[in-house]
Length: 401
Ligand code: NIG
Ligand code: FE
Image 1 (cartoon, protein in one colour):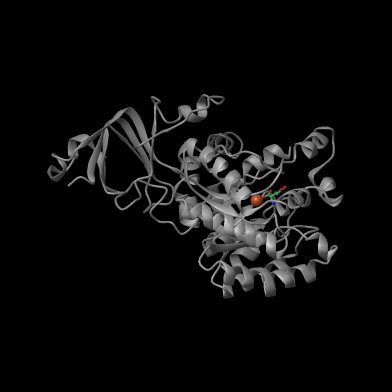
Image 2 (tube, rainbow, N blue to C red):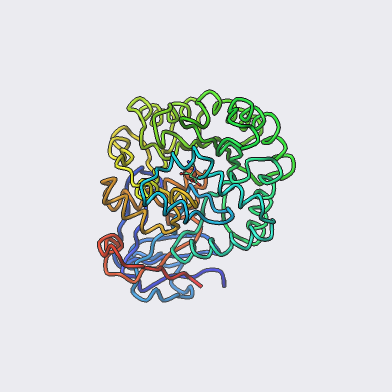
């Protein structure tokens, strides 16, 4: 049968085990048996079942094989960039000061509102290619730079078109990413418009495109109460909540995520101990974004170790966006996970594969156990730890053709 093949000549195979929270299988001299686009068997070459003895072989070239990375938090589509604002920050202005003056997210909103669906799709494909080259095989993508119905609808349409072209991505509706200029600071009215008008209309216009909804709960943006109303409205429409939580200050975002049974709470630099416990109990995935902490020049790294000890399945993501983290490189995030969040290599690797896939309800991604999608990466290194150790190297994986 032509859709059966065995990947041979591997230095080894490294994969999280979906049955055990933090366990990583490291199998030297492994082979990987594939049937169509699925993993059928993996293990030491010497143990390959006889049924596979005659299957066509693919030469792995002595590489390590791993599952592809899954990025559970990106703001993929936006117009323009914020290099001017970045320069102001280098001269001392803070992210919050720039936002309070009407810059920040709202500057990107101006550029995004002026973009057509075709322009958004074109820029999206360029960025998706860059993610893929670096080993990201699936990602979560948010709307949120429209802040009004028609622009949010164009962003959703652009994501639908990218999916139609074959890109593997999950869409999160985030019309509550900031306060829209039209509401002149009236967060209450803005949250009501999102919950009662925009989310229902986005779901009506683009059925099946959005899987998740999100809200920026932060001092000066939406309160936890307003966030709750937005996410409950999303839930009534079949959208699973995710939350931008406790990013710049403690706002009870993690607690809110747990209360609502959200798939994830993201950022969490200022998460409380109670919030960590609540997330562990409610099986909310904390999605940590150390690239953002780095790029904003903050000293408070998210407490990954405490979260792991509290029983949370921590995930890592890029947060790719033009303001707080213009970085789409999973290796940078893996390195920051190890070097700043003090995760072991195996933990950081699991946090960029299995745990994000689970938070996106994609059980067939993020590992290479039987049944997994055959989204595999081949790395020409002697040991996978080199990806972190040679800290400035721009490693690129090879893919199965
Ligand atoms: O995840 N916190 C809100 N959203 C983004 C920043 C977006 C921007 O600055 O453009 C974040 O950090
Ligand atoms: Fe974000």
